[in-house]
Image (tube, rainbow, N blue to C red; front, top):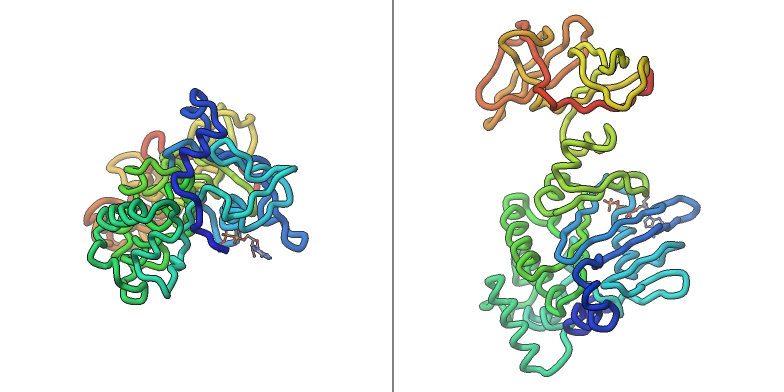
Length: 371
Ligand code: ATP
């Protein structure tokens, strides 16, 4: 399949043909509805729906095997859904009556292994999907190479480039035909972690500058928060929650979503007088029935040693990690293990008794299973 052979300036072509001018500004660039795909009776993707507005970067986040890549591949047209609808730029890519093959979809693709053409030099790789007069193509390739600082590498072959340089070539090759939508599957995971931060920032700058709409797959929550205007969390083929990074971090739909973003401290209790009573104190439990089981979830950086008040906790270990210290304790009474992350060099002696408490409004309360 030629995955990069989109016609030039697809975005304006699709808009002009398929979207009324006044609707274009507000209409999502990507709309996915009730998407399903089964493999041998097992649901890889089940009833997934979301939309992405023009210029937005959305990250599909989830553990290995949750269906992220299958979702992206269906949007690209590489995988055929069993059912569901996909629209890009207001145009149906796939519904009950239509299925557009990948080469006719207005998308750019960037994969983990970059998939550069080894027999073409850098300039030919970047220009591969471009159509139109040669001078225009040359100008576009030249401008993109200059934008990412690779002008002097135009005549090199992919094997003569570093990993970071290959990533930049893959990115501008996908951007060159001005796709409506960029689909990126773990685009940074093959890069050395020291290189990754800089490459991510540069990629983000380029995507924002070109107002490109992006769907990016990642299993790295920090990367999703760094890159995404919005994050959609998947689990076992289903979309569990979507929202801004701060919404997912501070108001996760359940404990599983909360656990994606950090270690958790968890204490169980019952609702009484509108509050969950736990070994770490009482916490407001809006929406939970009186007497019902509940669990309180607190991130380690929000469970801190206190001068006065709090719950007694015996220190088991305390380690200095540079920017912060990690203190592991056991509650007294109760015996539950807790983790606290505190800034700087706070290292209480193992065996000593301290007091810990949740910072105000930091606890997340969910319905419990009663165990
Ligand atoms: P990862 O982060 O490991 O790439 P993922 O979230 O992208 O995982 P998918 O690649 O979408 O997950 O796979 C979802 C499920 O579908 C997995 O259980 C996988 O084994 C299964 N699957 C994917 N493609 C196929 C296929 N062609 N044939 C059979 N099963 C498949």
